[in-house]
Image (cartoon, rainbow, N blue to C red):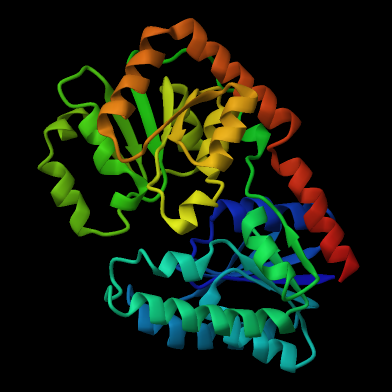
Length: 362
C-alpha cells in the first residue's frame, strides 16, 4: 500500500511526521512518500522525500502557491492513502477526496484556540477568525476518511464530527534516549522547542538572573523580534542560546541538564496540550518544572517526576529551580520516576500500534 504524507509548514525532519509516523509505516511494510518544503528529492530511511522548492517565508505564498504545488505532486504520487498535517491543506484534502482518495487529517494543534494568541493577527479580528476557521475545519473534517488528534482534547472535539477520529499522542521514541547517562553539569536547566512569550521564556530568564543557573536554550524564535527583547533582560547573560538542534544534538543536550523547563502560559490551547518536550525530559531522566495546569499536575504528581508552578510567576519558578538544585537526591529520584513512566505509558511504541491499526482499517 502506498502512503503519501504532506506538509507545507513542517521541516522534512519533523519528529512526529518523519521519525515517528513515516518511519513506523515504512518499517511495517508500507511504501511511504513525504512531500515537504526545502528538501531535495531523495530517499532517506526507505522513505521517498519530495521537495517543495523554492519556498518563501510568506504565509500567503505558502497557503496558496505552495499548497497548489503540493496538490499537483500529490496527484503525481497516486497514493492509496494521503495523510496531511497542516490546516491550510484542508482544501487540497477535500479535492483529493473528490477524486476518490482516502485522506487522513492529522491535527497537531487546537487551531481555533491558537488563533486567539497569534501575535501577527490583529487582536480585534482574532475571535472572528477563530470562529470562521473552526466552522471550516469542522466542515472539512466531516468528509475526511479519518482524523488523528495529537491529544485526547483535540480528538474529543473531532470525534463528535467524524466517528473515525483517534488520538495518537506525540510521545517520545525511547531508543533516542537509551544512551543517556547520569553525568550532569552543575546548575544547568534546559528549554527546547519554539521560543515565545506565551511559552514562558521571559519568566524563565527572569528566574535565573542574579544566580549561577545556566539556561541551555534550544529552538527557534517564533517572533524574530523577541530575541532582541530578551537580550535586554538582565538574566540573558545566563543563557546559552544554541539555535535549532537535530535529534541527536537534542539527546546530547539533555545529558548536560539538571532540570527541564516547560512553563507555558495558561492559554486555552496550552492548558489542554501535552508538550512532547515534557515527555522527552522524562525519557532523558530529567526532573520537570511545569505549569500548574490540571492535566500536567496529574501526570507529574502521579509519577512524582517534577514540580509544578505558576508559569507567570518568575519568583515561584526560581524557588522550584533552587529546590531541585539544592536537593540532588530527590531530583535524581524524580528523573528515574520519569524514565519509568515513559517506558510504561508515555512512549511512541504504544502510539505506533494505534497508527498501524488505523491504516489497516482504511
